Amino acid sequence: MCGIVGYIGRRDVAPLLLEGLQRLEYRGYDSAGIVITGKSGELRTVKAKGRVRDLEARVPKRFAGTTGIAHTRWATHGAPSDANAHPHADAAGAVSIVHNGIIDNASELRARLTAEGTVFASETDTEVLAHLIARSQADTLEQKVSEALRSIEGTYGLAVLHRDFPDRIVVARNGSPVVLGIGEKEMFVASDVAALVAHTRQVVTLADGEMATLKADDFRTYTTEGSRTTATPTTVEWEAESYDMGGHDTYMHKEIAEQAEAVDRVLRGRIDDKFATVHLGGLNLDPREARSVRRIKILGCGTSYHAGQIGAQLIEELARIPADAEPASEFRYRNPVVDPDTLYVAVSQSGETYDVLAAVQELKRKGARVLGVVNVVGSAIAREADGGTYVHAGPEVCVVSTKCFTNTVVAFALLALHLGRIRDLSVADGRRIIEGLRRLPGQIDEILKAEPEIKRLALHFADAKSMLFIGRVRGYPVAREASLKLKEVSYIHAEAYPASELKHGPLALVEPAMPTVAIVPDDELLEKNRAALEEIKARSGRILAVAHQEQEKADHTIIVPKNEDELDPILMGIPLQLFAYHTALALGRDIDKPRNLAKSVTVE
Ligand code: M6R
Image (cartoon, rainbow, N blue to C red; front, side, top):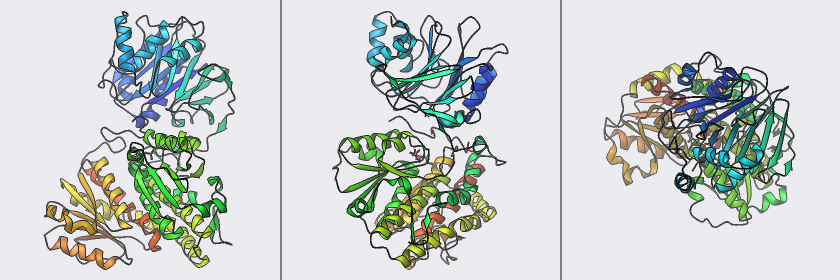
């Protein structure tokens, strides 16, 4: 959730690191800090509570150096403050460290070090590591760091500078991403390629338990025990420009607007018209294995979990394999029964969400087969899974997920079609779904053209204190995702309910001050959904419907183009992304960085 960036080379390091931090700020943003190696090897640190711009304002004019590390923080241990901001140092200022993750035995270590006379300057778990490294009697920085790491339990992605070893940065990873950027006589390190791609697209992603030493013209990787590992750089497929705002005022708006293009990308090169199916090269599941799958269990968090719910329905409908989705954060704590005939699918935009990763690791430990449906290539979940498919949404910077949700659902439609055609889905139905998939980009563009009207509706409802979102079967996960979008970006309370459950309780909430957003697709449940609208209307509830045709009982209807019944959920959530966006804009919210949230939740 926090961000790390580091550089060693010949360029002036402070502007490079500040620019890298700006690009990482979406990961966490309550404080930031930077440390550079000064002319005589001394470590010079500046820290600030607040945004990267607050840090920038504090960096002195004379702050020259060509080696440094920096951090943007999202508080876990200790409140946001200058003192708790990273980097953290030992009392003598010999060691400086930036760290993502959580040290589970920090209190115990802190108590021990305090008893031995160490004075702590912050409340963070990270500072413990700085002291441990400084106290180590080992000869090299690499040995000092690995010795310190052996005393801690927990997760880390970290970078270390040492006054006595000014020619290097030592980094390590366990459960929190670390990527090396390989340049010409310069090296970078970051927790996310976003901070690197403007300078190099040659990267090495460290594995858990791996460390690296970066020097200006060289790098090497090794295990925490010191054995050399091989690291072959790969090329990042995302361009630096895809991280820019591209003329939009916010990343959220940009990412909503580029969904047609993103969907086109997830479909590209995968459709096989001859056999009315799709090819998903990375699944590592041959037809015989695919036929023997008896259940599919999808695991994800937040928006990815909602995408997984729609995915489960698509799999049941098209492949007739029983499927369901569950929050990975719950699954991993309930000692689940792991069934050898079940195929597990882990869904994650970042590929780094700790709860999902931990669920995958637990499943692998119990011998299950796990596929990943992931956006970030080479991320921890993608690497841990036995196979899977990338969703090719391109980088998503806004904390609030939009285009990745849409692309993930399309990726599930592809998986469902693939499995369906191996099993009992007919050629005719395969063709019908393929034609539907091909219509999606054009239909998304059509929906986005209605933005002025959606904005008008958002302004109309922006004074609501709470909103109800309802949908039935295919529409229910759409309602859940739309309700999450509204609450996280506008801070308006929103609750999603199956429309079929209205009478069993939530109808009591309905009154003019509690508007309802209803998902009303033109499918076999249309009349049932209309009955729900009548029930709400009869209680003077205000209704905004998202439907394929004007809804008489609704006060307002956003009409979306009709696709195949199974694919309609992909389109029906998109106008509600814009609805959430314009509501948040009207309320003056910090759209790309909603309060208390971070893009990538790499801690429990
Ligand atoms: O990177 P992931 O898809 O694994 O992230 C999962 C959730 O943390 C994420 O979807 C979160 O709910 C977003 N803020 C939704 O907009």
